[in-house]
Image (cartoon, rainbow, N blue to C red; front, side, top):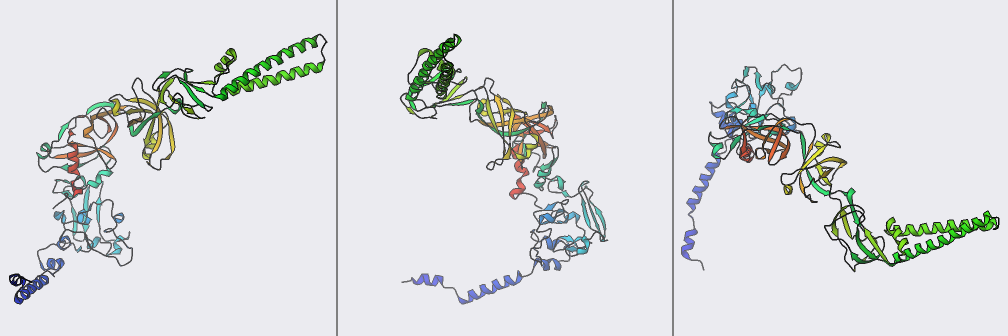
Length: 543
């Protein structure tokens, strides 16, 4: 059951609803006038005001399917003219950003945001080489905008478009034109102006002077340490058996020939017995041959007996050599086989020895364990050298050759570098990392280098030359390039492209783009970079 008071509260008078509908209709009718019509009714408005209404990009269409123009296709834009991304037109035709350069005496194409006498979309004949119609050109080299038209010619007194908001030339304004940073060469820069003279200081930005130094141009790559596989051995038995004795433990350094582990295998006993038996038969055959040779010399024995004695001797010699080689195939050295012969050893014991001097970096040998052919008992590594696995960007590959010096730095080793030279460069790009693998052989030189360390390596590509050194905190990475900020005044900084050679001990060596004595941001450079990139966060050119 509904409460009567609640029903009266929800009921609206019919006259009230009619009045509200009339008011809404009046608002809709009043808002129906297009912005272009309002601009036309305003006699004091400029030709471009209706195009700039709302500060939005141009709305246009094409008759042919798939057809494009410079408005919707960046590839068709004049590469020598700046593009206003905020308003969707060329900067030199954006009256919202630059109202001072508008020519009121020239007809304006509102559809394409160009003067009528330069709009090649409405007037295709303008694009023809033999056209006599005057057009607008932008001379990039001199940074001078020349606007030629039927009404006359106008030149910018400042030498190009000017950003009034940041008080610098438009082509140098890093805040309004951050995309130009990727085209800068070492030594070139863009300007970044802060809000006030005190803004940079209050934000914690501090400057310092780069120090002159001799630097080595190099390529910086990522690296990882690995055992030198040319000085690594897996100690494995060549016969099935049981571990009888373990001589060495993990981490011990052993010399070549030292015993590591003793295996008990019946096959070894059989091979030793066969070898010793072959030696006995060989000795008998040798004695028989000597006797026959003596009888033959005295013309007592028949020649047939001598021939048979010689054949038996050669046969037994072959049998003994085969038995000896079988012992060596089981893993015994020549000295061990000689000891078997000297001691008449017929035991089932087989001792595995170190093939070279090194350190036991892994152990899987346990007394009483049954082992099979190929079972890994130890890993022996010579730690006097290591491999340095390098990941080289393909674009830097043309500067890398065999034999170039490499200096690797690892956080775990502190300030001590690891030195080596490149010994191998892969011929293919790794499909997973999209890097080219390379290898250098390095020597620890007293440092305790471990396998699996990750760090950075500097590959020297030329001889040492004059440069500067700055704290690594001064260098900012942007779009695969390196930049520093140089103070021009209390509120104006230059985003300077530099070429670095190496980073050592929190210091960065710069080869090109910076000179000693300049005021470089050493603390708070990331704050300056945020100021430079603020237009990409929607806080850029606002007029």
